[in-house]
Image 1 (cartoon, protein in one colour):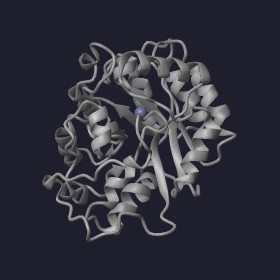
Image 2 (cartoon, protein in one colour):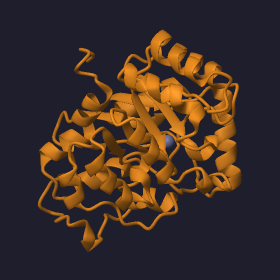
Image 3 (cartoon, rainbow, N blue to C red):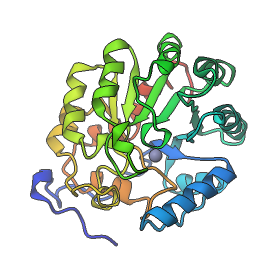
Length: 306
Ligand SMILES: [Zn+2]
């Protein structure tokens, strides 16, 4: 078992709170991955060749879900990504077909800026398939968030009241990725679409400070905790192992979503949640981060989905 977080800057007072959640505590994991088998294999191969991550969790949807359920996960958001143009429709169709077998899963669609008709693909994903939003992985997809070809995509998200989950920031990844992943280019999107409800993956690590500052200006913006709150996660991302302080978590308690990147994490799933129970956080704050905020972000309660 990894040692507990001990950085005094965390502001936690371990020992005063239980290191386990109360019985029956229910999680919503807002960031997991399910891919078509051919893509899962390619992604695992990429990590084997380009990183020292040892990925051992299964990737088959039913096996992934079984493990999440064992960990008390009530519902989970999952997505894939089109790393090149021309495959988004196929992936979205797979996500939709897969969703029929996974009643607790919440799929988000994918689109590539260089697709022939990004707006049409977004329309199909959001209207025909009824996805609650889209995921963009700028670093892998390699286009700018404010690429004008994406304007019809953002317009549809706003018009249909759906969410955007976006991975921006200079994390590990494809060579040259930083060129596409600068926050400024996403801020332009937020300025143009102030109603857009969006979540930045990994709290924008290593740009976490800048991302927390964005929350004050953009009321529809959220941050997900994926790999950004544990020492194991931050080290795997190549970031300094200094997660957000309790002060920040409490100040922005309504705008933080729990996510994990499961099953593509090179450590135990519990590492993605244990930090919360080792800190002196009010239980109400944990309930928001691990459940209520995702409900509001995704509109689960508003549409009567349970
Ligand atoms: Zn991810």
